[in-house]
Image (cartoon, rainbow, N blue to C red; front, side, top):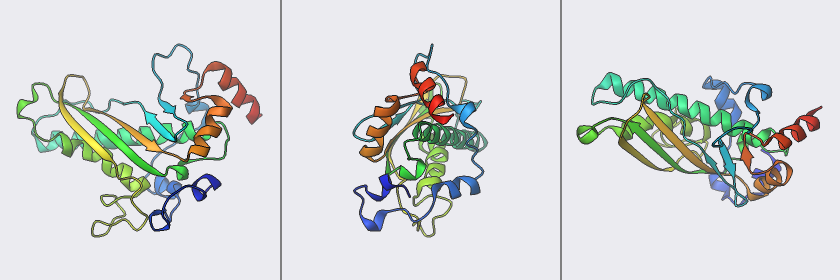
Length: 220
């Protein structure tokens, strides 16, 4: 773990005992390259991630899947797979948002997960009652990476690696759209790391053009 995680205020009993990147590799999650993922904010209307000095990191929602949700098992499974795809996306965004400036942090510095919101596309959803099940595809993959009782590594509801992927959550249906669901999530990183990131390149990802040029030059 990095110095940021080592110096964070977490009880010894709740600290992760594994490298997050080992799980990412085992789960087949592709992070891509720096060049593919570290881009300019020029012309963008919204950001993918925003850092706060307190250490909270807000990730924007991402729409995945091709089918609106109905009370059909195969359709719900499609939604769950779309949730996993969204979790993959957020893990990739968070990795590059934390690491791209070379401040010394990475995904192992995620202290815990705060809150997820899953908005499920289910038009006329008065009779649709499976929004939580759909969003479980997202939440349970997130736990598989960061630790939690519903992770692929859990035994009898306990992940030996801890619970830092477990989060408060809302799963809400009734939205219109040409996709299946849109999750968003908030995580906590050490305030010292958040401050180092903000001081070096700002609070927003992708990077403002002037900050993108700055970190590119630092990599040369």
